[in-house]
Image (tube, rainbow, N blue to C red):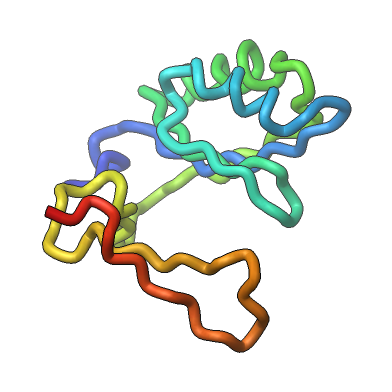
Amino acid sequence: MASPVKYGEIRVHLGIRVRGVPVAMVADQLVRIPEFQYIASCVGTFELICDVHCRDLAHLGELLTERVRRVNGVEHAEALTVTEVLKDTYLWAGFRDAEPGIEERIIIPPSATPGQPPSRDRSTNSP
C-alpha cells in the first residue's frame, strides 16, 4: 500500500487527557467525528489514543481547535503528526479478512492465577 503521507494526506496519532467526566463519555463524542479512524482507551500519559486522518494542515487545525478541544472532558490533546510511514504491517484481526484459525481466541478465566497458562477456546465461530 502506498503511503498516504506521500500524497499530501495528514496522519496524526492523537493523545488525549480526560478530566472531570468518564473516559467513555469523551470517546462516545469522538466516535462521531469521521476523521477519527481509531480510538482506544489506555493507561499511561493519556486516557485515549487515537488515529486521525485529515486532508491537510488547515483541516487538522480546524479539527483540533473547533471540534476535539471543545469536547466536554478533553483537558489536553497532543498531536503527533506522521511525516513518513516507514513500515505498515499493523493489522487488527477484526479488520482483516477471515483467515483459517482467526476464530481462535485465548480465554483467561476469572479464576486463573498468575503463572497458569490460559485455556484455548476453539468453539467461537467454528464451522
